[in-house]
Image (cartoon, rainbow, N blue to C red):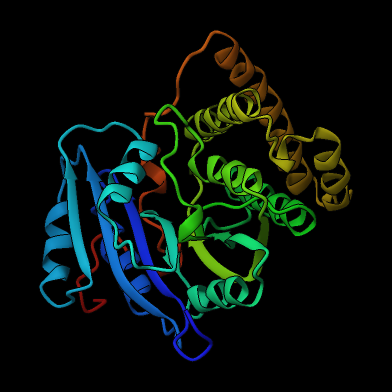
Length: 317
């Protein structure tokens, strides 16, 4: 890689039954303007899909030779899917992007990540800022927005990366397939290899948090168990495990003037506490979350005000 040619990037997209969002995600990724860098390939690993995910990818691949598909007949977990990609990726690429399928990259996102990586030789991994499309003003929208705001605040102090990450290719090695937290596992590996992490808050991706308490609780429990597992396995602790750091940032958002908003934040704290407690019990009894139950309400990232109204025709009638 030289300053004139930029970085050659290979992207991995892991997908399980992502029919509702995969086309939007891939268009947002393939359409990124990243010169002088180049996106040399986008590899979708479809694991145990029983919907139209693979058909959507194959249809798009007809018009873009950079896009190709790997099919895993059984769903073995995201870490397994990433390793399957790793065995077939373009080894001449300078950087590897790992992208979740339930996202939409905003314009300029990938360029900002690559610019930071190219400009900082000591940085081995960069990550974008996820911004949820859940509408505020009701319980789950407030909880999800509060969570991601706290993650942003903490990541701005001490990088915690996820959703879309880019790593130097030389630092990418197979990860344990029993890992339930793939991005954090990459963080641990990059740090162990002597490189730094960097959170690029200007690089934005849209995501969708769960729209109901049950799915949200299950997601938070799984992630907590994964972080406890990673700490024992590698000695690496993600900054969001630090309760004192979370509390320090959380108290700043209580309004003491909007009871419904404050009640949502209290609910978020109670749910997080319960989820971490059960996640810790899962970790202690060695329950593995590498293959998790899909939160169906997170599959479509489209903001509510852009979704078709029930009964409306395609032309809006």
